[in-house]
Image (cartoon, rainbow, N blue to C red; front, side, top):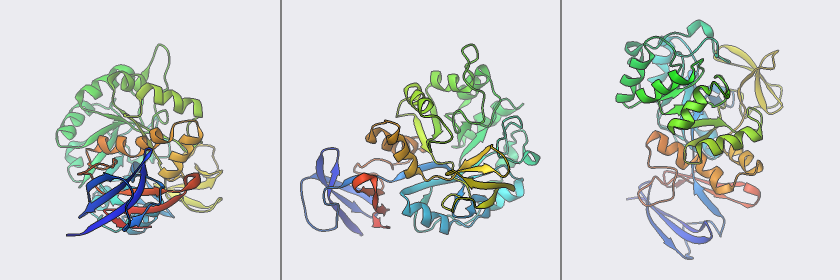
Length: 359
């Protein structure tokens, strides 16, 4: 039996000892103690959960080499992630989803397929050559898929959504030209999330509320990129009012060049991209190709926009963990022992994954 402690952890306004046994929080008691990892009165929050991240440090989920990415993400506060694949041919997706995913660092809770069952009109930085209608038989070739982004306006999409949902996959509406009525039908069929809300979908119109209006009315989850570039501050605050912190989920949408220097030219899904002004753009274009951010940077950005610290943390921990059905993202007995110790000015001082110090 492996036991460990974090002592003098500030949770809210009080100090606690967090006892961890075999990677799970086994006790939480108020007061000062000595021993273990001494948080010394610093804030302790749950590890971050990123349901939408394509890659980092020059690597992409489609490469299938997850160990270096798990190391980088773990050291930057993300303790659970869904490697998110771009639209690609079925053979490549099948090969990637069968790769080894059990490595030190950030834990992989399954894959998020962002395509290929999306809209050519709202493809964004995706490769149109591989976009197609949903195919449940093809989908069954893929392994360990926790989430898939689908454009529900495709013929046969509702049957696909119902069956994949029944089999335990989270269906997220995105890269879609769907209108309000079709989005409502998709939600009633089982879809429970919006992918990168406001990006690559019909906007809200006062007579055509589209997928965002449907998602708000039906009270499903909504992912949002909070890097200060993809979405204006006022729109982030509006989304928070629409969905609330228990449904609005911060995502990084990080792609291959995340963590690399300004001006780095790379590719994502076979499409050339460049790091510029803290984001990633299609090369020789003003079209955003993805994010160069970490999820912790998104949390800090949310706080900088005026969102309460605890609310910002909730949207990157408890909320996405509930979306995935994981006992993570909260500091409670029985939950996985993934913790961050936060210093002054929101510095990331310590990372604990599965009850063990990682950073």
